[in-house]
Amino acid sequence: MSTTGRESIEAGRATLEAFAAGAGAEQLTECGEQLLEVTRFLVDQPRLRRALSDPAREADDREGLARRLLADQVGEAAADIAATLVRGRWGTPAELVDGCEQLAVASLLSAGSKQGALADIEDQLFRFGRLVDGDAELSSVLDATGSDPRGRAVLVERLLDGKAEPVMIELAAAACYGIGGRSFHASLDHLVEAAAAARDEAVAYVTVAVPLDEPGERKLAAKLSLIYDRPVGVKATVDPEIVGGIRVQVGSDLWDGTVSRRLDEARQALAGR
Image 1 (spheres, rainbow, N blue to C red):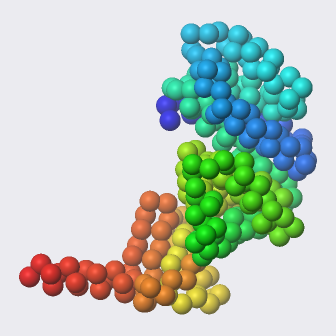
Image 2: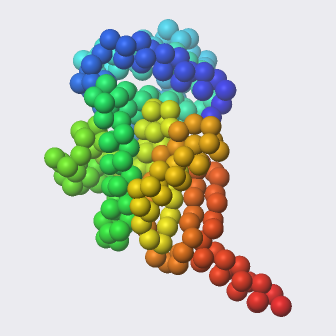
Image 3: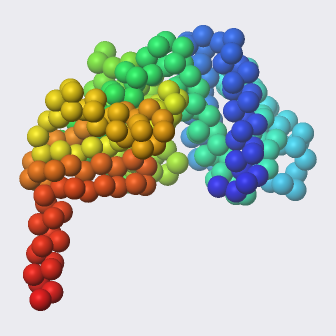
């Protein structure tokens, strides 16, 4: 994203934070839901998003257009945040869409924080992702980018209804549209990390051949927290195919100490002789 795009998002974030300071969880959830609807509207209207991000138009003109379009469609908070965004400067029209989506997610996570449920939301997003991974048919349906995302979102809502935090369900449904253009699975992982970041934590994706016991997981989390100088939460997946050892990924950092990797290296070395 361009420097001007990042600055415009920060201006929108300041508007959101000012609203969040006096808002309750229900108000923040509603704001997040409405900003997601604005995002989808912009995705469906390429001429409009070009007009709303056109640097040749005056900021007042862009804001006036946005407010006329959103009048009676969204609440005051969502309209104010959207107005702040369209007053900004963007490298491309797509950056405006990404900015609106980022603040929608931020509003929903702020609602989760007000409820004291952020840790649960993070864990539920991760576990739902692994549940989908373990069901080939469901995974195929939810990753089918050529299908209607609304239908996939409805399916996710039905699967999770009464089984997860309402904010988590809203975020998981949003993943069906592709957060920032990502696939469904990548969107879920992004949301897990966003929820962790909202609690000032990093996420370590850990793959092991057999389940970690609780002391082992705590010890690993403590070591990683020392390395990264911030709290790190462990999200463990069991995969017997790695045979033994452990694989750890934190952001773009990957440590692969699995037996399967060492066997692959041995095979390659033997083949090269």
